[in-house]
Each structure stands twice: as C-alpha cells, then as structure tokens.
Image (cartoon, rainbow, N blue to C red):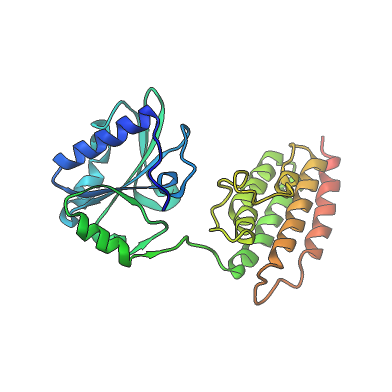
Amino acid sequence: MPPAPTLQPSHAAFVERLAAIAAQELRIEAVLVGGSYVLGGFDRFSDLDFTLVVAADAQAQMLATGQDFAANLGPLIGAFTGEHVGEPRLLVCLFGPPLLHVDLKFITADDLGRLVERPAILFARDPAAITSRLDVAEIAWPNQPPEWFEARIWVWLHYAVVKLGRGEWLECLAMIGFLREQVLGPMLHRRAGRGQRGLRRIEQHGVDREGRLAATLANPEPESLRDAILASMALYCDLRRDMPPVTTNAAMPEALHTELAAATAAALVRP
C-alpha cells in the first residue's frame, strides 16, 4: 500500500474533523479511507472515500440520519444515497466552499469480508480487531468474465445503430459513451493487467497508448456516429482476442455492419 498521501489543507481539515467526530460518536466503531488515498495518485482534485464501520444495531439509524451526520462534518451543499450505483448504504456528499466531494459508506464489521481494495484505518476503537478483519478479507476488484462482455456488446451496439437510423443522435452518442465505460475501458484495463475500472485513469496509466478510444468519440451527425460505432466494434473485436469467450456470437459483427449501413443511409436523408 502506498504511504499516506500529502493532503491539501481542505482535505486534511476534513479528515481531522471526521476522525474527531467519529471518536465521540459511540455508534461508530471505525473509519476507513480508500480510493486514491490508498491506491496512489491523490491530488487536489481527489474525492475522499470513507467507510464508516458502525455497530450492527445502529446501522439502520445511521443510514436514516446520514445527512444529519454529514451536516456536522462541514458546510454541506448537497447529499444523496447511492442507489444509482447499487449501493444504498452510500451517501454521496458535496461540501464547501472550497468544494469537496466526499463519499460516506455505512457498513458493519461483518461487511468487511469482501472489499475492492484494502483501506487505511483512520480511526478505530479496537484497531487490532479491525486489522484482523482486513487481514482475512477477500480483496478483489469485481472484474467481469469474457462472456459478460460478449453477451451484452452486440445488443448495446445495435441500440446505438437504431438510434442513429431514427435520427436520435444524442441518444446514440450516450450509448457509445456507455459502451466506453462498461466494455471498452474495462477491457483496455484488462489488457494492461489492471482491474476493470471503467475509464478511470486510463490516461495516467497509459492503458490506451494507441489512443483508440478517441476514435469512438463523435459529433451528433450521421457520418461521425457511424465512424464511432465502427471504431467501437473494431476495438472490441481486437480486445476480445486477449481472452476469448467460450462462445462468440456467430452473426456478429457482419449482421451489425449491414444494419449500420442501412441506418446511416436512413439518417443521411432525414430532414
């Protein structure tokens, strides 16, 4: 694990305040910090990612009053729970000024068995007990197998194609962006031997040295969208060779090329 980063004053003040408040809040057993704080690359633009380990009989109450807890940590501009990422235990917060994004995740000690990274311990009532739990935790990024990508990519690409043909160019753009995040970025990380972290830090880690993701960017116009879809198909087929799925879709990409040509022709004659 990299050494603790040198924090900007606003980050440092928040970390100190959270640790002090947690020490006074008996429902909190420990405060852990993850993200770039432990993975490296922490800078003035970094979020603060905290996991608050709370007593099992207090978790529901802590979740219900999470915004009140957050409001005690500093000037809270806004906060909402993380259902959009499938994590209702997460409270996404924006503090400031100066503006600071902070994630607060309320879990119990029993939830420490499976983690995506090993966090640092900011505060713990029983440091040895928390350390012991972390020592035996299963720590792995939730990578997807090749079959997951193959089962989805052609359906998602087809969605982009039909939106192009119908003249829904902004929707087509959104789907191509979704593909970069869900398929192409993760597979580029896989090629580099890294966890499949979407598009995170692809530039800094040199994951896309050939700049092939740039070819999947487009303007909201037919030819540009067509070229971006073609580039997405080609990049996926190339990345698929690294770790082929057991079964590939025999109809693709040929069937999609045919549909794309028809959709582009239809889009070009739209008023």
